[in-house]
Length: 537
Image (tube, rainbow, N blue to C red; front, side, top):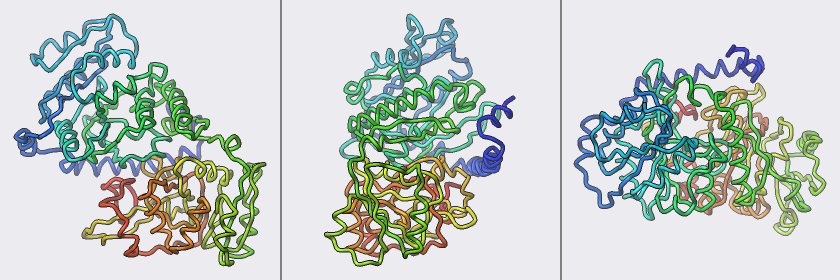
């Protein structure tokens, strides 16, 4: 039955690609299990952590909405919290169960930090959680699902970051993995980027483990029950819209349990959650002035955004630049009826034609197509324009494929640190060699638009003033890093594919570009395989 449902959901060809790609996931999980000692603290490290006294030592209120929680799950949860190397916390269990299974399980614990609340009635995950919020006394609040567990250093690492950063973050999230209930193994690690605005619009990649200040919670309000199932995504987006400072700890601090009834085990088990997710994202987009319609993809939890282009695109002039007349003819032919927009006026010119600043300034946007790059996906122009007209966007690029439908670049990783296999200032094309039908890590190679640090800009659209800057400095990488530094998003839309014959990518950035780099690439995990440009261990 499950196979038939998958065939109905994906179709035979797509399902075949999912099966092939699942081997990469299995290999990653196997590698993670072999190297897990590098991701979890040792007993010696935990003891050292217990001896550390922080200047700022906040109290954490960990809220758990419980409902008929199995004894073994709840015991493992409580044990993982009591094992924390940082001791200043309270564990609030908001119990909406009809039976007394939760109360009986907790009765064996004798720890004043455990607060048991028997709710008058079960009001769902949001309502039960909000009731727990009313009893918190800590400076920071965290949510823990009733069948998941924390690593013993979770609160210590949060406290360390709160002491290191100034001003202190309003929210902090970590990496996570999954605990397979059937095997008892930790699998499928989720190595996340730092805050990535556009990635979050398409998927709740933040998820667990997340703490937020009580001050922020009081300002934005608790969970919204009308988004149950996606209440955490809606809450994070609401905080982002409010302007919360969001930080990331690139360490596994949370184990998300997989069992037959969990969303992690079977996304279809809570389909309503994903429909609520579409509503949550739509609300956020309206609140930040980028309204759009959100739809589900075949991979539940990954969303597609149809921005309101027609309603927001005023009479707009677009300049499309190509290598030569033959290239321009191919670009004209690539524009389909799906890209027909009454308010859009397109002018085609050869890129090496002398263009004065005055002439470029007559246009609103410039699409620069280099190295004979030609789009091969339908609706590509609508996709790129829908992104570039949004607030704070400085540039949007396509992903690039070779003739044989093999990816050669889907954004770029910049490695500023000197390592044994990567000199400072190295640039790595992501997903190079990946079949174009493969999702890549966290679906970032095929389904979503994400923030990136660098792109070779072989097929990119940008505001006219950004193109003028590119004309002045002649270095696409320096431009990308300048835009990021100035708070303007550099994006790759992985639903737009451009075919190129070859990529001419330097092994190292120019000294001018290197001066703009951060200590690390914020949009990719430090656990990236820098040789393959993929997230493998």
